[in-house]
Image 1 (tube, helix red, strand yellow):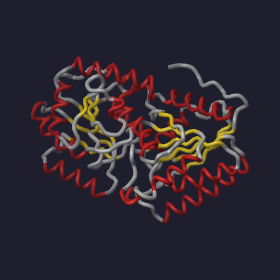
Image 2 (cartoon, helix red, strand yellow):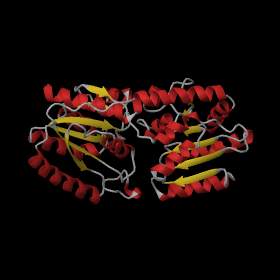
Image 3 (cartoon, one colour):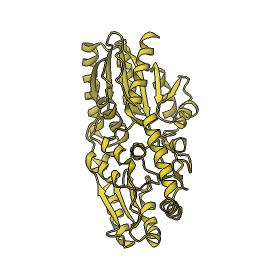
Image 4 (spheres, one colour):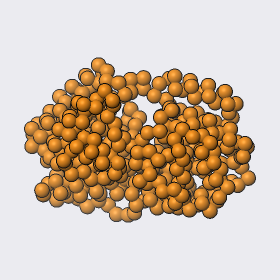
Length: 379
């Protein structure tokens, strides 16, 4: 893909609000990718980050720090709205507890006359059981404050319509992931057929991401291919997850075969992907994982599970293999099938590289967002 974004007439004023790393996470990486890829080209763009560097033990909990951070963001937002007077307020967020905070932000933007683009992320149905009665009506109200709503999957769009019963029009705009040219160059890799497969998984080191399933699958893979190796990139949500993973590796006598790499820099992460043969992410729940998009961008065949938006993208066996949830034996068979069929691996790698270039390249998302800005300004 080539060419630059076309500037919008009159260089409209856009206030972009969303998290930037830290903390680590899909929405923060997405926001960084959009900004680094030219979201501000042709615009007067100002940024307000909602990232707060939450300690990993507090991720998923509402703490006093969260409340103070939300109040501080609201104060800064009010000042920016009064000074900058944006024509468009672009909010990147999720449909979980953050929507209670973000509704206040959208009300502020509306009060200053801005039109609202709500870039909504998360799983298809993120409503926790204790919120079943109160959360959907609140999300439905929040959606009425937006002029345009985008979500990353068809399942999320259906959830917004059916779970939250939103009447607002929703557009599916796939998540985007930036990858370096070095990873694209690695697409032409030729696996070393004299050794076993090099497997990589990326995500929170947890049961929900299927990390335990993949570790439990490794003895079966090693029984067929003794030189196989697995690298898992990512820390647990809690330190007990890290301890459990280490104990599992030790109990299965996988030292030297499984590397728990923890948190890596982007350059180190992409270096691992460039040296990977098969990407494996056997998640139990997802929206759509950016790590999967990164692996596809590197031209890797993938083994994953049919959760969230994954089966909208991974079509078994065209560009990946889908396995049942919580099934290490199925992971063994899928990995061994791929490693034994070089033609299938190459087919999947080519299909994934093409799909990344057409759908997941951040330039695709930036162009579509600019089109949405233009339509909002002329509506």
